[in-house]
Amino acid sequence: MNPWKLYDELIEGIPDNLSVAYCNSGHNWTTVTSSENSVGIAMTISVFSKPYTETESITGLSLKRTAMLAKSWNFVEAAIGVAAINSYYNNSVRSAQCGAVHGCVNNDNGDAFNLYQNEVRGKKVAVIGHFPMLEQRFGSLCDLSILERNPSWGDYPDSACEYILGEQDYVFITGCTLVNKTLPRLLKLAEKAKIVMVGPSTVMSPILFEHGIYGLSGFTVSDVKKCEQIIREGNTMELFSTGKMVDYINPIV
Image (cartoon, rainbow, N blue to C red; front, side):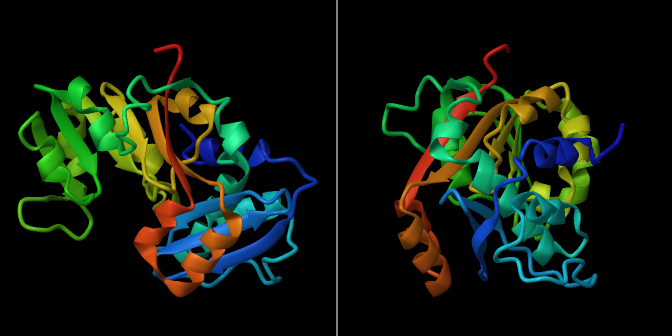
């Protein structure tokens, strides 16, 4: 299987007539605002092991050309590419077309790990990425395994994915795996589980359903100017005051 297929399909779906109006590569998050005034977010991964591939200014560049940077092995540049993809698909109107709204979404539980609590009860669950308060939310409900590239005490190193994911009922995957290119392999390893992609880097597109994903828990920005200001000022948690978490499940599962 071609590991680039998912990336190519997402990039191909972006119209040719959109451009980048604003780009900010912040310490924690990278944002791209499109010419239709829609913001996309991706986690910044500060690894500069390969040189930049784009030599022109990102501002004013075609959105589709910028989205192609998601395939770069310079992860700072790749975050710009994923943010460009998200600036198209995570538009609040467009993202609503990607699937069925999660049944718990109106119960004041915007966090994906709260929304899926009933589903994972008594199940084997793996989470790629050590999210805040994860043990408190899931620890007593299920057989929980946390995999992390920089593991804390009790976590598995991320290389354990080859041994653990095939045994799980549910697998939650951080959206930043699109940036570091591990997502295609993780989807293959977890293909027997219900897979949920989580976090602001998540692309809210039904294309992901076609690659075996059961649920999408991402973020759409409604206050563009406030979001841009917060990223410039590095106020990470305030980011979530600029829009809303959105949760969709594959309507044909």
